[in-house]
Image (cartoon, rainbow, N blue to C red):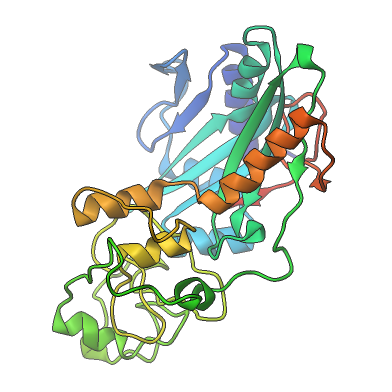
Length: 333
């Protein structure tokens, strides 16, 4: 038996498909919105969305692990397969204590790309970059399109480090970073932050139970898991980001300090002779927003081999366009 949330979600996704929308927005206290050909349009005939309904929809879409992750980080993205529509990217975000939800209809974008020009054969895949030689848990959807008249099909290259991830310690110490390396300046930190870090073990964050009371953060709701989180030396780094306030710079596993931009660049697999320009924060953004070169290399080499007719190991793509190709899994990242 369908629940109220199922009925609402099915009706709105069907409406979005009929109107060729690419995104759906759910904000509490407002009617749903669609993005159609770049324009945001309200569905004026729909009822105003109650926060309780958005919470019901969220509860029906997420498994226990994802619910816990959303509660901790206050933001979550998953990809689901929904009926005839195909792949939906769902974004859950807490803003000012209230939950909002949006859907991007990935299959709509794929269909448009497939029909562009002479037509393209697309291969879309959610890559786990730690499986491709990157010392970091980082997930990104990459779409490769080849003109249909060429008669070629791109295959997703098989992971190169699926069973043996490169660790944060290996990334930063093999070889050691030269003291004269560019973009290697330290971040100034207050005494209280340094004292707090002294009580946080490798792999733990600001919510670690062993932190003395006077050093704990006075935060009740937005307990993001990356706040003052130390790297673990024997695991890949968590995702390097390009922005964020205090506590989001990434922290060394044993030294009581934030990572330098050069260390972040190492984790992103940039060579030490690659020089970033601009202010310290602008450099941080450039690094955090980049696709790791090592992962890009694996994908681009597979593109070259496809055109050259050279065989390489490959795996099935894990994203579909609604036309019955590929798998039907659920991802979260």
